[in-house]
Image 1 (cartoon, helix red, strand yellow):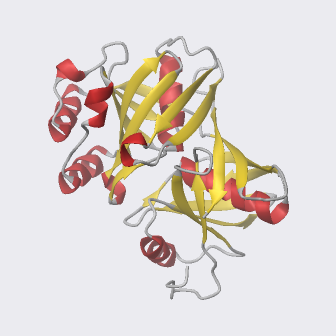
Image 2 (cartoon, rainbow, N blue to C red; image 1 turned 90 degrees about the vertical axis):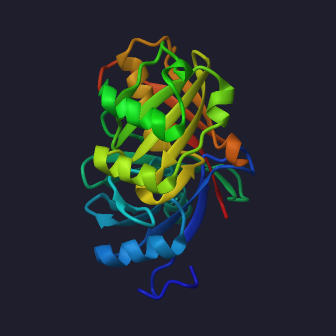
Length: 287
């Protein structure tokens, strides 16, 4: 990034994760460096990059120490920035699986380049462990009011819940695609609510069928109105579906970003063991 002044030696790669072919997806910054910069410097770089997240990685033993920053805050785990990092590592070191040490978990990411063009790369991450619990009624009421929804807009098959797969999210399932398309909220009010409730995002979901979901993800806690592709909430949501006994058949597909004209495609594989990691896959492309 030409405008970065904090450390001229740092190169910021721009990679779009969970793309829909040569379009869509969610852009992330990726910095691979010998040593992680100071926290304030990483925060400043993320702010200047301006994407919803930038990942920073430095060698640590036989793997990589990784931290993620939005323009306004550090986040414990970011799926699309991990996919982007997997693509960047594959470009630099060749196809393989890379161990990542996060602030609160140890995970891995795979990156595979198919063909000589090196423009589209397949990547898969193994999320931190997942868990979920019923959302407090007062929190649900506050979030419904924030988005202008009522309880009649909810899909009763998927109750509101606090879900976790490396970061905290609230999920609300809506009973129509129209309700999902109508999402709107005040960014400042959303930031206050999410920070107060210790939520990284609010995930809104519409179920097309038992294995295909359309989602929107409000990321006000990081100063971002909406993310077009969110691997962390996808992992957490897949774990939640397992927790409630949803007939997922071993995997689900998520379509996100359509209402932003940034259609993104995420695939999540669900193991039977409660709480176990979710494998989230997609493609990445170099900007």
